[in-house]
Length: 125
Image 1 (tube, rainbow, N blue to C red):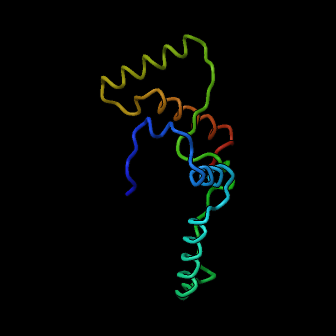
Image 2: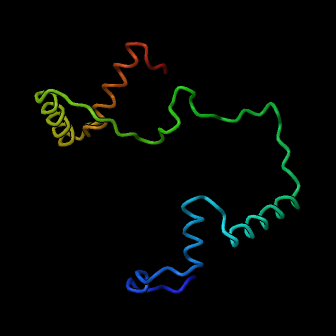
Image 3: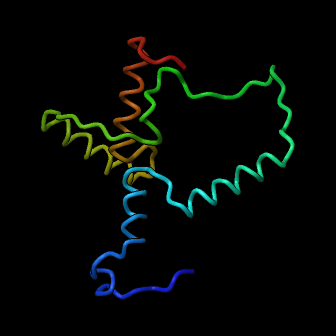
């Protein structure tokens, strides 16, 4: 593990070695130490026999309709009339107090959107 430096030491002018590593990081150029590690990794991979794969084996892939930048939950922003926002929040709080799921605003809106998308043919189960 590297020795820790104080904040003041970190603000001191950059050494040439550190400047080279910073440029390599920013521009995606492997530094000399990274090149040596990559070469070792390649040599290790070459010395190990390849794992046999069967061509009929199904590899699960992402849904082709899903945009590649979407993973997990994705924020979307929209505006609603005040009465809709108020009632969704009221429903959320009431359901939470009653112990009924879904009770979060996010889950309620997500379920409503999913139902709309299903009934209008935009989403298939």
